[in-house]
Length: 189
Image (tube, rainbow, N blue to C red; front, side, top):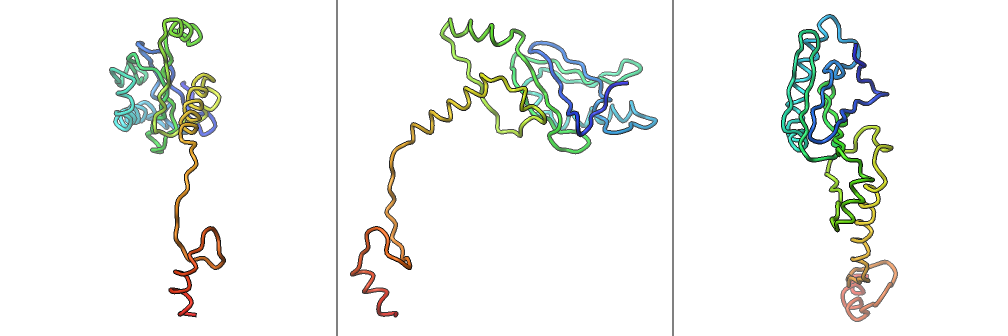
């Protein structure tokens, strides 16, 4: 029997680009599946694909629910995009499932080759929640490129700016327009 998804062990679907990934749909069931575990797994698999259709389209050319006579499987046919996205769990509706597509060629090899050719490969972070339990799976070069690009943007905006503000304060601060203050505030006192 396939391992179940639990709160302590987040589910990750991992594979390489331009390949087929096959995952038992029973892994989507939280807790005991009961007597009809396979039919429940099939329903959850269909719901899972509907909920995550947009995100899966980014990394997959096709997603199907397959049945081989005894077990139900989710089949993902990946395209040439690599990356990681959080997917919604069909049981909770929260981003609890990580979908990771690795490059066929490891980055230490392809990164050096692309650098020699003069190509820059920069990751593009998506505006999505973090993958559950993925903090140790992010390669250092991905973190470095994101941090360096943010520091570069911060340094580009490091110019001193002063804003002229006119306001009435309980104690004088900055340049005080005493004539205007005396004309508008002293008659009220």
